[in-house]
Length: 69
Image (cartoon, rainbow, N blue to C red; front, side, top):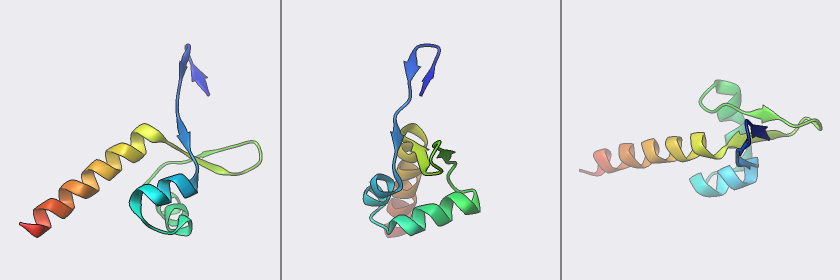
């Protein structure tokens, strides 16, 4: 996907799931709940913007750190 010459990295549900260490179905549930936006391919598969996933991952790790302290 290109926007004005910039290419955006899209991740599959399995790739997102491995980053969060959850099942891919959990990632789909997050998308349905609005916690994570998804893009549909022509074949109907979900893809997730890497930048958004990394931001959510960073927020999740910050939350975990504050709970430990």
